[in-house]
Image 1: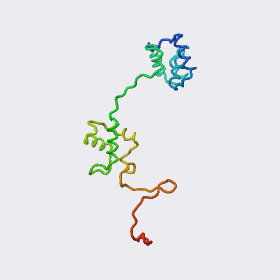
Image 2: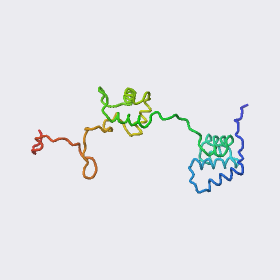
Image 3: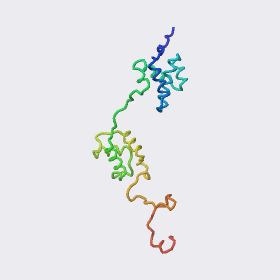
Image 4: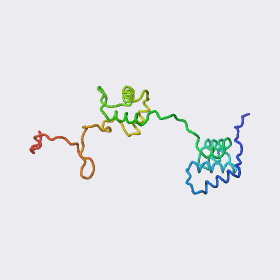
Length: 190
């Protein structure tokens, strides 16, 4: 015979909690969709719906409904309506280190390299003492946040590279090239 899954206890909200939910729904403050769904979740569970039926009614997942129910039973209304702390560590780079990496990438690559790569930026940042230790993903995310793609030559602005002139309508005109003496005289090049 199969074991039945453990059913969560029926939820009975206190009168004070019901008043608080009603106040939040009718109050003048703007509610996020997440908070609104949690309020509806608690009301549906109080009305006697199962976790899965509540999830279907509020347009969520049964795991989410179960978490809201568990947090209410263990910690109360405020915990059920708020977010749990999310995992994640501190930032790997501070703003000074990020700026130094961006400046490094905007300059020419080291001798023997045609352009910057993520691995090269990582190695050079540690070699130059910008950071003691850093991973490739941290460098990739930093460059992506600054909208830099140094492996694409045209994405990095370097002094003296392909000077361009804007046309009268604000669009790009062709690259400025010094004219040859023959072209100035009106003769066509052969």
